[in-house]
Image 1: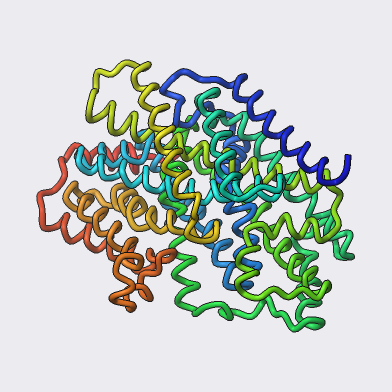
Image 2: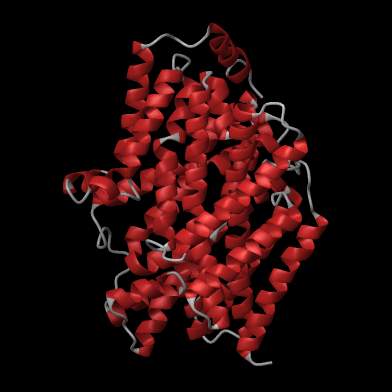
Length: 506
């Protein structure tokens, strides 16, 4: 077979493996559909967190945004990793002690309000949809790149593959399976990078450090300075994006629900630590792909104009592998790893959204007597509806993979994060403050696209991808003010927080 055939063969082999895994792990229990799965230890839990986190934004979008913006794009690296530090310090152990399975369930129980729970469920569904659009774009680009078809065809075939897997397998996120997924993703991303670094003459055993020489070569030989701070934007934009991604990470519903798969608080903390380590292995590698891509373009004399560079950014990892002369089978391995990341992330997100529909809306609010089979039917139906909505939006995506993903983080950072932060650490927070805070967070997230044309100052202060720098503090202030002006929450909740959430060490 030629190189192209080898690449396609590897990708098809991975798709076939998804079906095999789905048949082996088929689940019919609504308790597993959309929730955590089984416990597999601290390191295994960390690998499951990392697998759940690795997405098209991590393996394709991150390299693409750094390829375009250089230093400015590092805000994504710092924000997405720093968010796990926030989780570790502020929320991980307390969430585990509280003992609710989904973000809307936590909100409903902590604030004693079905209305607050319904709004939180709607926000969780919206986050899943936005996040999934970015993943569908990644899947569509990989299908289009590998099979030589139009993007719209690629994203349609990818959506059918994801939905078929979910219909066959039920719950995607069995953590033992996710450990294997992380191993496949990390090897498929790092091994081609090592091969590329060696071929270009840089230190290949640790290419995450060895690409520093490539940065120097870019600067000296071609006057391309990737390390110049804020060349692609202002200091405020960088800080706003970094902060938004941090608090957004700490507020993502499908990340928060992961802490209920561990048996105790200590393991919840260590799972975050190991997860951060595994995530960092990938994030250290993405800038190297960006730099090698720019270097190969410069050496070949092809310096793309801004529009062409933006069009190529989301597939720069694959283009760099091809330009670097990697064997076809290795390009296929790289494409398969990116496809795996996008595939499993979008499946998990769809099921998180389906869990909000089935558990937080249908079972908890519409029909509390619903049988397990009825709840499962609602969950699977919700998955199909969400997938159809995402597909329609992904046919004409509004931005780069990383940019679309950042909008989901902004919404999470403006809504879910303040609710969890005050709900855990301030006993006076009540249902009125929670509802007012969520509504304020939604407005802050939507200010730029809805009002930016009429009031451009709002778009500057609340960028669509970076609105939480001002939005999250504003939401916290609104929650505090409204809570103080309205009746206090029940004393039982205060005693529960004091005794069960904060009252003992693990």
